[in-house]
Image (cartoon, rainbow, N blue to C red):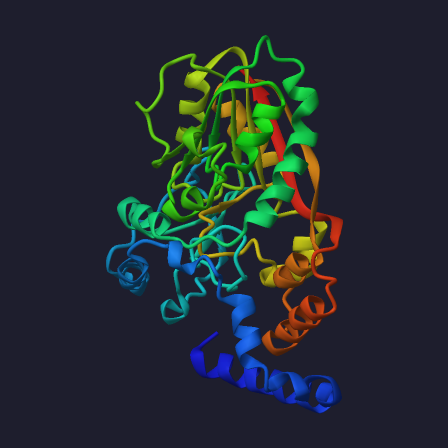
Length: 362
């Protein structure tokens, strides 16, 4: 959709809202500063060199430094067909563009679908170094949501961890502020490492877990073969340019009998099918989107056995669910303001948000 058409649709939506909800919205329009503060994080100051990183990323997305087209990053078959043309507006990028659990922007790269393994993947994609720079400088304002997610993941994986030979050594890839590392500690794991490419979430981490966190991109050579009983990677596998290589390296780091656990978005979930391209999983950060079939294929190709895949039910505050839903922006801001004013936004709600959890044994 071109820029003029987007503007027309936005203006039409806004006019309709003013007509039908004037009695509710008109006193709120004067509170633009409040609305803005709901979106602009108090943690913006934690980002490092964010302005230059955003400028670099805008330059990349404008076309000069995109990779050549890639084949399916899971099964390596080149028979993919077009799923969706790119929907990008580099001018809208800010330091939350590559932040976790952000306000959805509804932008994405050109997407292909693999007929062999059912993976949807971006092609072409930005250069690895440019992505690393964008993630390093990303802001962070989702400590509350990270806490809720860690509780959900720990409950889902407790039966898996109970089957491990021991709990000496655990690695959490894309750990954020280390919320799940704290859960790993409470579950009896020792020698825990949380790997995170962004500086802001590490700076925001609780002091009791910060010493376990390392700022770096996951890559070969960081850790020793057979060092960990468990490797976890939550809502990160969509963000990497080579998901199969990540999983193969994770398997190398596992002890015999160790487990690799992934959490990701399910493109074939009901929520995604209902929302279509307005689903928040279609995002500029996501270089691939999985289904039960494709994530199982990923773990098996990485060399794991006894692979299991199941649906994950997420529990988050109502305000976070409101941020994710594709309401028109004026309505969304009004709802967020109302929830905050009425002190209802922090009430937790469990929903099938369209995520899946998968694991396999070395």
